[in-house]
Image (cartoon, rainbow over all chains, first blue to last red; front, side, top):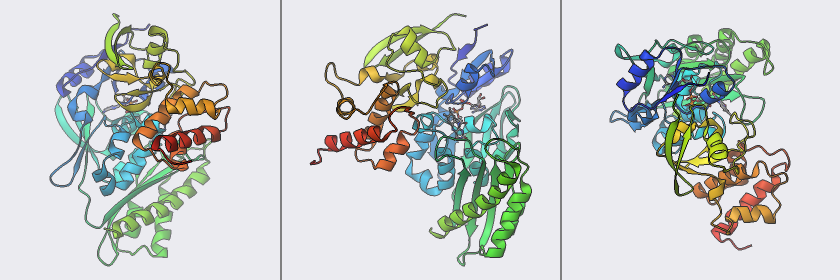
Amino acid sequence: MESIQFRKPETVDEAVKLLQGADGDARILAGGTDLLVQLRAHMIDPGVIVDIKSIAETRELTKNDDGSYTIGAAVAGAEAHERDDITADWPGVIEAWDLIGSTQIQGRASLGGNLCNASPAGDSVPAMVAAGMTANIAGPDGRRTLPVEKITAGPGKTNLKKGEFIVSFNLPAKPSNGGDAYLRLIPRTEMDIAVVGCGAALTLDESGTVTSAKISLGAVAATVLVVEDAAKAIIGTKLEPEAMSALDAACQAACNPIDDKRGTVEYRTKVAGVLGRRVVSIAANRAGKN
Amino acid sequence: MAKHHISMTLNGEPTEFLCSTRQTLLDVLRDELNLTGSKEGCASGDCGACSVMVDDRLVCSCLVLGAECDGKTVESIEGMADGENLHPLQQKFLEEAALQCGICTPGVLVAAKALLEKNNNPTETEVRYWLAGNLCRCTGYDKIVRAVMSTAADMRGDAK
Ligand SMILES: Cc1cc2nc3c(=O)[nH]c(=O)nc-3n(C[C@H](O)[C@H](O)[C@H](O)COP(=O)(O)OP(=O)(O)OC[C@H]3O[C@@H](n4cnc5c(N)ncnc54)[C@H](O)[C@@H]3O)c2cc1C
């Protein structure tokens, strides 16, 4: 049994070679808060674990000259939370990331891990999608970039090919009059898995009319959803009651959830509409304040 | 497969050990280095009884591999007292009986120390959220939270 290799490459190329050359399952290790739990539960049996944290690019969080951010795939939530710039520009992304686990989990939990673990309930994912984030992927054929919503293929599955991994994410510059937000419903106040999660990012013009919007739902389908009809329902409006009702209905219509101990299909669907309204209100409030 | 030869700084001392890939930092502390202060409660990151600092970050040592720790600086509960002198949090937990069975206590202390180093004047809500990943099945938390708040006040030198 027991012969998992452990490798700690210092360059992206070296990591790709290790992943590509591995026979059997090769697993990336970022913060390990999913991986180690799965390893111990014998849910996975990798031949090699590739710790990417010695690759500088995976560990840097940089604000670029154009106001956008490059977020290393293995940056921990606690590190991002301590940064005033990104917290002010994209509070929704940060609040979603910050919801992942306890202080101890925050010391390790990464966006790359949350996304590639591919739980339908991953909290950071709808917020990343709403904010228009893209993933920088390295692999045997070089680099490519994919929108975050194109990464997961289903519970526990990603669209990454053998030898590929996410090196970092791009987060666009915050638009002027832009705001974002994330909310989830859990049965407790801390440390639980989302029944529904909803992220929204939008921009307003001077009159308060919504000029663009992206709304994303988590935990109500096999993968994260982009709810285009919800965005359409509010673009061009000032979020009047009719617009909010249309948004609510669009969120509900997009749902295709499971029934489990945390919530029935009916409950999850209803909550998706409620969270859609609340998240959009918060994002609009934030957009109006800058 | 050959074991990994790891060198790290543990509670201020250079420390070397051998481990297999599957061994967590908690396994290494307890089974290889005989430091049994860090407890294994759940082994899945939920209970916080194994809390330690790695490079100044609070983490669950059950969710860190020993092999990851080469070159790292680790602080465990064993490094908290200065010889016979207890850390103010340890002293206060004794005085105020902020523990019963004691299994969660090492993790709570390590986590509380990390909080007070970041924020010497936390609100009760901040203390409760910070410690949400440290489960105690005995005390009901009130005594723990009060002891942390009153240690913080002492350390700031507030008048009683
Ligand atoms: C107590 C506890 C509470 C939790 N609470 C929450 C919660 O509230 N909400 C939530 O969403 N999650 C929660 N989680 C799950 C977990 O903490 C998150 O999913 C976290 O973001 C995973 O990040 P990581 O860096 O630890 O990933 P890892 O465990 O290192 O990796 C996770 C998976 O992704 C793969 N992977 C990692 N990085 C990359 C990459 N760059 N490229 C390709 N593949 C990669 C790994 O191979 C692995 O399969 C919790 C976990 C625990 C233990």
